[in-house]
Length: 295
Image (cartoon, rainbow, N blue to C red; front, side, top):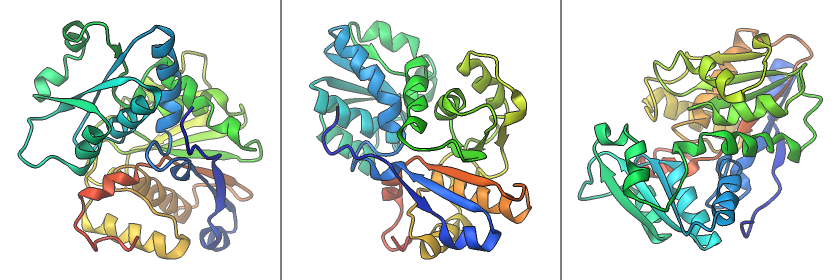
């Protein structure tokens, strides 16, 4: 278990709830830990316990230069007494990102590879023998199992809709597993051109799922993964001013923007109770120029 791990809290979106006359709550996973924040701890914890159980000494994982998963894995491995290796997508530059600098400070050994090499992930398990491999973003059965624990931490049964941002679909797969059959699970996709995400999620859940209670929206990626045009930055500042909740440029800003747009379009029926999962990742904002955000 990590030191400084806090129980997640729920915050009411007071101004938006009043404006739309429905209950809109946020599960503030961004507050559970200063480094391994958001959904990262949930997606990592069973992998790390399994690595120790198998007597592995080193964890190997994958990510990009601004990966929340990379920095979370580096820190968590340090806390668990494990060595860590990060396979980083893209050639090494003279100035590496703040994310990767921190990962190195936490003891992660970084290996930069071309995008072509990166896509052949099976090769790395053979090259770095006797390591415990965790997929990018914690994707996989144990990551889904951990994500399913998110709802177990709170009273969630009165919510009609549970909403989160989606990358590979690991977290939403866990939410589908642990939610009630009468609750709708909504994902806001942050990847462009990943229209096969729904099929991917159903396969990951690995049980019979009522497709009518799962909906993924693909209209709020703002150009693709980590793309952050000026109108998104303005939205992040506007949302901060209204609710004092910080968001990141990759996931949660697009999540809250998408939910607001759906509210404006009257997507949610009257008497809906929404729970939005804040999945953390705020360190991703470190790539922005100082002063661009109000928080």
